[in-house]
Image (cartoon, rainbow, N blue to C red; front, side, top):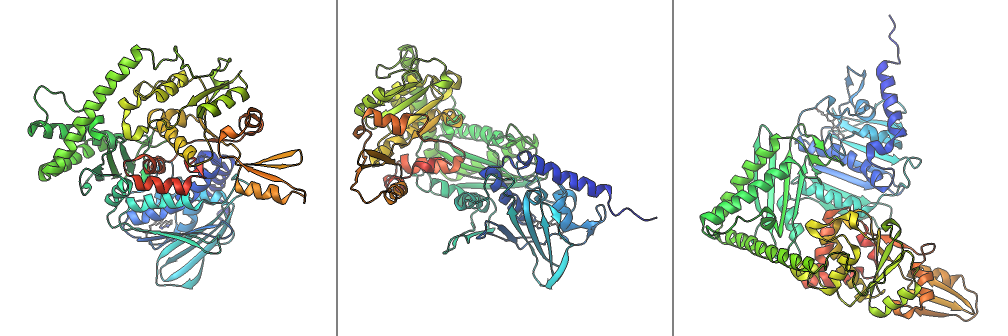
Length: 634
Ligand code: 0RA
């Protein structure tokens, strides 16, 4: 009996690839830059799985001149012999069967089931070409694919004693909005991966420039180095990060933690290298253990008196930077973005590990232990004071929009979705903006000088600032625990500051305020930065505006010989209301930058560079980035 050469399995494979190409967003999130970069992470994750299994020490990523990406590892190499169930080579199964990753050789932890872990076959389906090279069994094996389909069979094309896999992909420009990769985006992510996999060497090379850019990450301290890196520009309470780990039948857990003198909490939880943004059982276990242990210790050492209340978890975590990394065989990812760990067994496992690890540390390091407890006690006092201040201001109606600030020139429409408020630096620019605006939907709130630095001052002090109160009441959402996005009076809050260093500073202060107390405004996409022009070029009666140096050069190149003049706008005040409307406020012609907080890690770094207690990073940062506000658009 002749077997059909075209089996049911083949049809399944083709249908699978078709499904991916029909709905790429379902598999990689989007067809924008985020989805495109997922392709890279997906391929890299497979190499990292080899590292997790203990068979791979190095991953090399190259962005080639034509935007192809290759990922090379020194793992075992994808199996080249036939997998009976599919009557195809292991290579072809991995590259064409959806979710094949764990179907054979499925032992060990895998980055599967989450946002990634959709399998390299998805990458293959979304690539106009993919080349694979495997070194295994003394040979070099190669095969090429187009749009997910093999162009020929896997062939031995050379000899090698080494083992490993190289996958090179050319993303399909008919699927993705654009196929150019961003070095910094990949680099940041690879650094994170390197921190999470102690001693794994990851290199990234960009061959698109004449002078190739290259970074190499390898951390012998693993997540301890990660915590040091996050706290690098902060003043810490104790010398070395606390570290402990544990392995059981449930899996592995590793924790590194260190307090700094700041007010924010940066506890990042990972499961099988995936950043679990939405938290989950491992984070719950960590939090309850920490709260219990620190309170137990404080009571036992009589730092917390009998009549005093327990320290709250929030108070204990103020200024804490920590990484919790768990590895488990069968991770369950839940939540809206599938970044919440669901495995119930992780709660108790992490809890008991953290209880023991932290208790031991506190017992053995009495001096840092006192520092940690007294920091928490201070936080508790500050929080109580802030609550009082808030109650006081609320009683006075200051946080409610029933009494709008006197300086606010409100708009007449009441549908928040249509309304915008300009937060304008200085009374004089505020005056121009008031004259320029379309009062039906544009409100103006002038802010005086430097608003208070909220990172340094803490909530209760921030609340006593008139400028901050004016912003809160105008925006209508209240702040912190009482924040309510639905109460927002405007769906656009547009920060408009001068195009100089002071302007950049004030912009950052306002953004820090949003970041710390109204983060949901940023997440909802309600926060924007206005883009006033830098130059006006006048020739005869014709005026043109330039928003960057490059635009200025382009305008100048287009001018004929006649005399022209260039005016450099240093402040908004130098424009008359008509000019301000035309260049910066007219929705049909203006450009607004939408502020997004996508990468909490980078944002945390940017904000503490700018706003932390150390002065030097701040100066450097402002000098480096004063002209470029796009750094926030991450
Ligand atoms: C299936 C089974 C085995 C390894 C791999 C896949 C594998 C896949 C990729 C993708 C990129 N690099 C990779 N390295 C390995 C186990 C092989 C064995 O048991 O020898």
